[in-house]
Amino acid sequence: MLKIAVYGKGGIGKSTTVSNVAVAMAQKGLKVMQIGCDPKADSTMLLRGEKDIPTVLGLVRELKNDFSLEQMAAVGEGGVICVEAGGPTPGMGCAGRGIIAALEKLEEKGAYEKFSPDVVLYDVLGDVVCGGFSMPMRSGYADAVFIVTSGENMALHAAENIAAAIENFRGRGYARLGGVILNRRNVKNEHEKVAEMCKKANTKIVGDLPRSDTVTEAEELCRTVVAAFPESEMAKCYRALADDLLAECGF
Figure 1 (cartoon, helix red, strand yellow):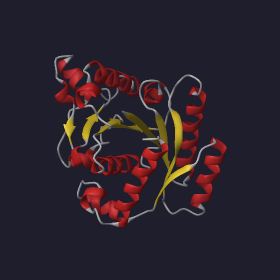
Figure 2: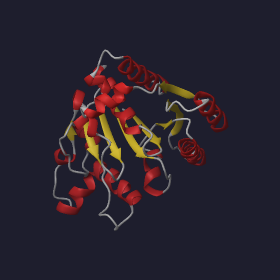
Figure 3: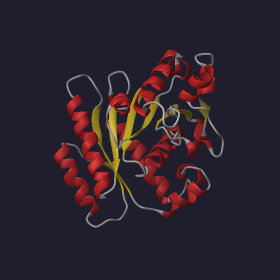
Figure 4: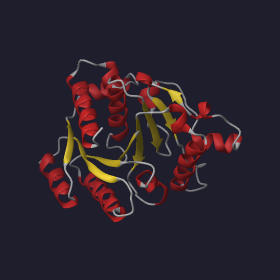
């Protein structure tokens, strides 16, 4: 079982990227699980259409421990198993600790054994990398971390912080930095800026996604590009990225 954590600044297109990669991997015949580690619980939205899914923390608050594994997960587009960690009641509790509790609950309920995924994708908010938000980097969770960024300054700043956190964990058996996914916003000298950041972080660009109206069109349908527009150039880009991530992880 391969476990990949994808980090990035909020709004950078991380969840869209992860969801498209998830479907692309599923189309290759792999069993894929996507776990949203964002308090907004919107990571798997494109996989679920307009259907709601209970969050792990929501179930814990409502039912304590009296719920089944099947209540925590839903099958989305392409057969991808969807799970949302969720967050605390607004104004109460720490979102980071909520992620820890949710991931521990998944283990306690035997999620990985029950669903037996070939690939697990953790979609993690990367504006801050502390406490629970660093949980998927830890030993026993992700094997590799990939960072989604554009050439915009705030996105690059977040990417640098994530890379620094991974470097600080090195030597503890934690996940390694697999590389950076450039999700273009068409800013000036974008590739050069991201390449320079990668050089400082001793990593590389493993995927380069162009800015495309097809992504917006698919999102309006609440679907992934790979499923909604399978013959589009953008779908080909996501499939190529899925192949590159698997190859980078030796899978």
